Image 1 (cartoon, helix red, strand yellow):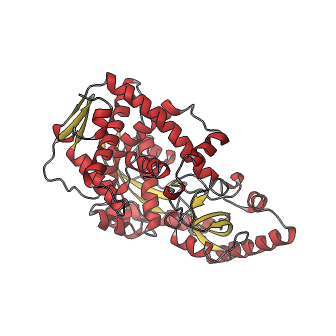
Image 2 (spheres, rainbow, N blue to C red):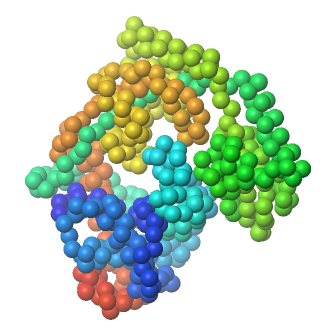
Image 3 (cartoon, one colour):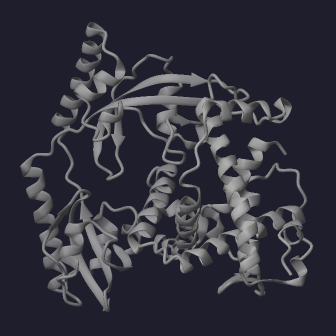
Length: 453
């Protein structure tokens, strides 16, 4: 296995992804390790192994080797959690909920907003998926925080990157897929005050129908709410705590009495009415109905025409894309140059798997330096807008090199340097931490390497 592949593989193994929560396949559970106060179950290992198989069907390694690597990373994760407890490092509920929302939003985009596809795949409701994710993501975020504390001063120079690249066997370098870099200029069609008034009146009508006993809140939410994450579950958000939701939403929710429905509440996502179903101390079980005012057809046409005129201005004035984005775009991130960031890597490159199919269809028709026609765009708050897409580069499949892929190699070199420091930290940490491992797993190479009794 190449060094670059190994780095990316280790990264995957440590930060296990979504399908780990799909199904339980271990009929009988057992404790296979104890790290300090942390327990690792056989089911933890089996779930992670099934997730690995889902992601890497073509990896030619035997089951025992893979499970030992996963087990090593589960032990490592719990060493970090043990250290977080010693250092009083605390991950807030808001951090966890933000990460859950991010993951759910990415899944939702992949299925074009059809939450039922996700629920059918996992055989669970969105709220049950979120519940399963909470402990998993708390552990991941805690481990990440400890890692960041250990490696925060690690840097690499161009010389380090060059040495890292030259140390790898070219024949074993992974083939990088098609890669795209693009930016956009966004226009949000304004929403009329009349439309906002209609939305508010509809919500008040829903509220009145529930209070009079004419309709059930859950039925109205399923039928009319614009929140794809909760509508299919009758508007239920489950139990929430302070810091997990929009400030305006929380302010209204925490003022409610059990069974009470709020007046209309405005947030960045739109307009809501909120039902408090149950209160447990500072945790509230909430449901809501969200309505998002839509721009009129006339305003949408104006936005499209404006983007067409912007394309002409760019061509006439020979504007660079970044200057045009700063000057014309309504996107809040336009001051970063208008480039669209890959939410999975936070870089500017996308492969086909990480691109929305609709975007892929657009960029595949462009040549670098070309602008698309105006196309619909729904942002993270599900607000409808329009944009023109500028293709910066389209890179065909190739092996990484220092010219085209310096940023990828730089990150890989940095990860290797961090891993070296973390491995050193781990070897020292196991010497002073109580670790007990089941006899069934003492054959794993790391047990002897770390000299675990």
